[in-house]
Amino acid sequence: MPVDSWVPRDGRGLAAQAPWRPGGSRRLRSGSLQAAAMAGQEDPVQREIHQDWANREYIEVITSSIKKIADFLNSFDMSCRSRLATLNEKLTALERRIEYIEARVTKGETLT
Image (cartoon, rainbow, N blue to C red):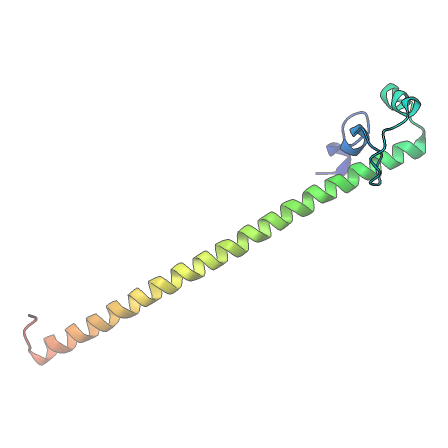
């Protein structure tokens, strides 16, 4: 999915819609900046900043999703390995039992 299709039609990402400024300071925006943003009259620098934050948010979402997929795959791998080890033990025990029974049958012993 291209980044541009993820950004709202007005060109602003989620960070641009937050009541605090990008960059971590939680100060409220000035009224004139907020009014200009609402009216869609942002200057090119502000538009680039908003686009940059939207891109960063998109990258963060993708990175988080990749980490979740990797965690799931690692968990699935460990679960499968554990179950396969259990099945292997059961098969080994059954093979030994079959070999024992075959040996008794070929020797002519009764199976009691």
